[in-house]
Image 1 (cartoon, rainbow, N blue to C red):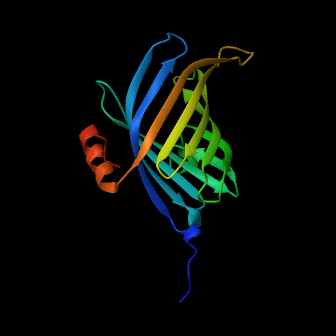
Image 2: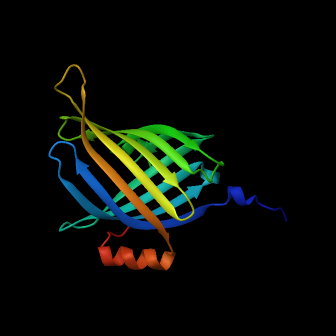
Image 3: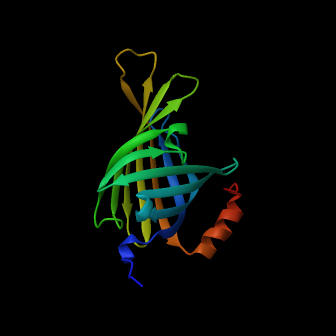
Length: 180
């Protein structure tokens, strides 16, 4: 029998809290509820984050992110397990102890249908045993502007606290999150 390094074991963490959205176009500020299940899988060189997001008065929706890792680099990101069928793509970097990183920074491109342009999302995440803090900056790039000028359109800030699997399951049900 051999020993497996704890650093190479798959881990599953649960987080919940609120996000604040600030429109840089209208100035409107709103909030939404966020739950996240985060799987760190060193054997597969992957991090999977499945968020359930609930805006006031709207049904909850899932927002998955499949993140491929090589060393301290994010080599690919997608909204699908098959990165070639994804709604977005991206790359980035990680800092801290390997597979226990405390900082994740990446950029994503997300097409805005119907072919009007793209959202470029700059995302910085800070991870502690008790919290997951995410800061997203969204920029619109019009397909009709030959200069490809980026217009800042939204800030998204979330401070999520760690929770038990039981708390997560109850909150998932209470928010009406879809089955996955």
